[in-house]
Image (tube, rainbow, N blue to C red; front, side):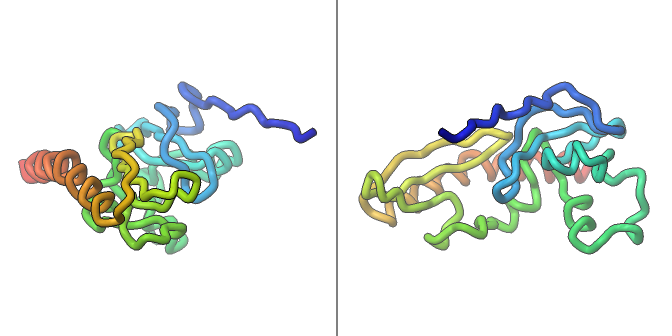
Length: 160
């Protein structure tokens, strides 16, 4: 019999200047959390980095020249309500994506293509489709409905 590990709930806990707000989409296979820094910025941090003391702020308290290249990317990402603005703009797909389209993957158990989209810390399932093209259409429609207004509002606020 295997032991099932109970998932830690870090919501509300403080790690340096960071307060955990809610669970976030995993970073690779690692559990991640949306945190608010004392400066007001939000950032996503893995459980390990919070608990081992490697991340205690959004990066506001460290000069960029002190960061490793991978950390510069994380420190400069903009999160609003759990959504990374730069990732939406770049339309990035996860490294384990085999379809070539963000949010579309093959469900062998259902013999169908699944479409999903993550937005503001929540995964929205858009349905399963027999045809790949239909799953892609559902994903693109959701991007237009969710991402386009979000980016327009973000850009408007940033230019004020």
